[in-house]
Image 1 (cartoon, rainbow, N blue to C red):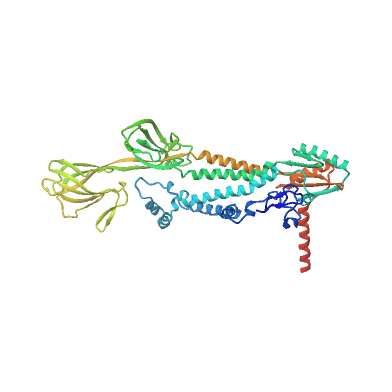
Image 2: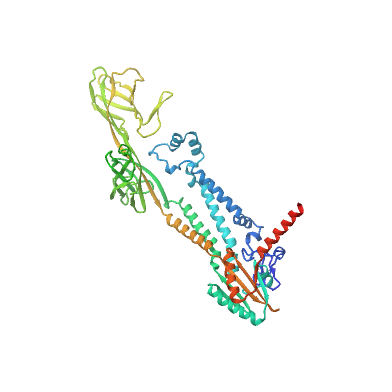
Length: 558
């Protein structure tokens, strides 16, 4: 690393454009500019200086604004793709149902492709989280690369600057004055600038008035807020920080709660209510005939249990009761940081089917068989010589494939059975295939049949279990980000330099990072009060000169 020694004797790090002490331009590029670049006070920026080692190249890559913007664009495109179809956490399927089949059933071929490409859980995918991590790294590196040099420059800025520094400021003015007149102007300027809430420093006939330096920190406060926010987003992949699970529970059933280890839920009853035809409601502006189709309330009455210490995992008997609760829409069951929401329901799901073993010729019944569709037995004995065996059970019968019955789902939506019936007349047994509205006898005509008697139903509740420890982190990041936005939007860093020269002149220079109108307004006030030199905006003059040159070129072309 090569240091740069200024004419004033100060040693500056390689890459510095303006001397840290006096402000002289140190490069030919800066010397040829009429207005000096004050973005980082001319201080050396690592990414603009070093490009030799692997660390330098990685640092320069992530510090690039183009790279940061590119990562943001790619992340936004990926997030947009995730909105084409609902993400997997928002697709309501009953426990045991195939999520891929649900996408195919709802969205056809596009749903199948969407699922196969892994886009159904895009925000939790490793590559999306990698993009988030790269964005966070880019923000951190860019902030350190630019923020630290800027902070050091502003903290260590000198009051007295070289005349070349003053002349290269956008606002500059000078006037011949006696030493007494210059001192009087400095005194008056100091008084007025303090009235305008500027912080004033003076050294040997030099004045520096500064206001709202903190505004320069606004973008970096933004970055801190974004980093905290992105950290909260990535924490959602860590176990225990974010839980969003689904649970389908049937009336009378006790089930372990996904995401809540050691907790169990028992469903006593599900209630579904609609508005009656003659019921007047303020919530819905509908005719009386149409009001009946609007849900009034649906809720699940539950009991929450917790496994006792030392209990075997999955044992629903060795538990202690926590509380009774009625889970309604927007009224979740909350406990230990978890929240259980009522999100969906299924009415009249098949619970059990009853059949009579009947003699086809006489119609005589040998007994009734009650089959629990959630847990059917292999054998049902009616007496010593009469029994029924279940050789095959197909909860959602969808047809035959090469002569074999098929089931699309473990949920009993369309149950079908292969029965083998043993009676005193048929001790070797008879085989029959029985489905709803369909009876087949694949091994020949049978003397007995399983005649459908009735069905028992129950309701199913769809609950969502949520826990989010990242919300405070996300909120903190958002608040800090907004503080940075306000700091950078509503305040500007303003500076005024006044300096006596040995040859009897008073130099004036001013700079602000934005909102030049306000800066000029303050300058007009203090100039009139303190009789300061008449100043000009050199940027406006330069623009006017360029316009005149362009106009002359156009006239010459014509």
